[in-house]
Amino acid sequence: MAERYSLNEQTLQFILEFEKGVEARKSYTTQELVDQFISSTYHRVQFDSYKKTPNSSMWYAIRRSNKWVRVENGTYMKK
Image (cartoon, helix red, strand yellow):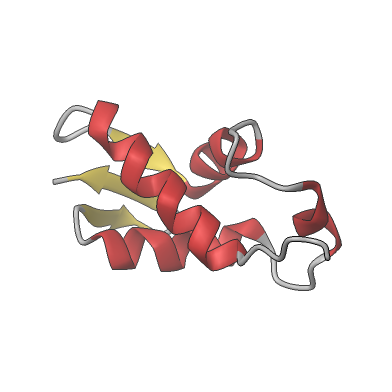
């Protein structure tokens, strides 16, 4: 049986791990975070066939993390 992965769950796990190495007040665009996610071990090839994109999942992960603040549309800063 093939393993099933949740894009939202993997993106959240990525953000929780990624933010440990980010200093406070450092800003990233959503696209920069998505690019980091895609090159990480949290990204799975099967996500490329999903209707939902990593961009919307990244927003979900940032909101759930509660350690980021939106600076402007598409740009987030770590608290």
